[in-house]
Length: 484
Figure 1 (cartoon, one colour):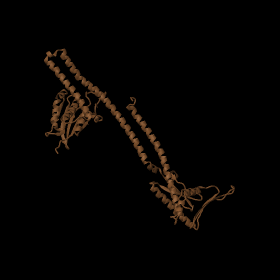
Figure 2 (cartoon, one colour):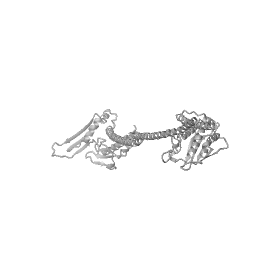
Figure 3 (cartoon, one colour):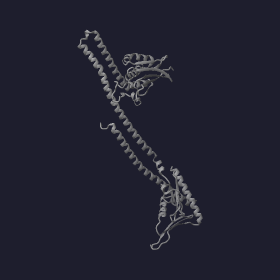
Figure 4 (cartoon, helix red, strand yellow):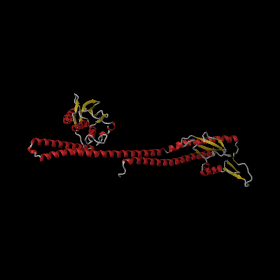
């Protein structure tokens, strides 16, 4: 899809992330409401079950082994009947509850009466008959059962792992007036349960009040929230990696095109030179002029060697990238290899009117490495310094040892490398442009990439220290050979 370029990918990724975020928020909101309702249902269930248990305990004292008591007073039908009796509050309705227990049977009576004549009125009342109990004893039992109910609610909350800031309100059973209020303001109350009786004295009704259930709901949703957050993070990371990959691919494609253009030009130059030389030999019958013939042949051989060197450089890099290069490790002394490379490059040094200052150490510097590839590393670094430095360049090469590591420094007085490019120069095909987006120096963009790969295969690294306008210092760090 040609239209899907990098400039469209970023806004598309942002829009997708925003849509994903909105969908996640909508889903989390629905989940929050569902979880909130579930928490409220559990709190309501805790209070209703506790009320059922306390009523049973208040009635069944001394008769705990009676299966009939347990079956009746803990049944959902009895609880529903009692709640209906408690909630039925109509005009001119008088309700009265009575239960009696003897050795033979237990009697439960619910009595409701109202006047048929709507013009007549009597005071609305609800009461319970208590046999042989003084008001003081009834009040004492009521307080005891209230404490038992509140304590049981606390235990049930802890068993379910619900840590809440709670209190309770108390209502008069007959009038419904508030007897004990909670210390919370109405705006801070998140949940209020129904009103429940907690014994058969019917003096008061209990209501659980919870200040805030928000964090309880959030805690219940913790796994959903974490998974939602992780999904958004992974989606954002995937888009980031995709955009970065596309950008790198685009840069790589541009660099490859530039590399192809440069290599085509560089390959064409020696071919053209050889063609002109051979054509001149044929056209001017230079067979009869041995000196000119030898000169043209030397030019052709030199150009063929240069052509072969460029082709080998590309092939070696391809083998290196594919992991097909097998290094021939042996014990080598670095300094003689450096001196040989410097001597080999004497012609290029003279053409640039440059100078190479080599500061060897008195002791041999042995490493375990491939002599050919190590010499290619040195050649590439010196060649780069020569190509990018101005005339009369000065290159200093020195060796030092520290912490069982050998450091070989290649320092020049060239234009230097801007800090923003210092990591990219080791990438394949990368070359620095000038202000007009033009390469002033011909090259393949493979040299430093090759250097980094070879040094890494030898267990070392390459460090670059440079400032724009103040030259470069490439430092090859390799492990020294040590006898076990």
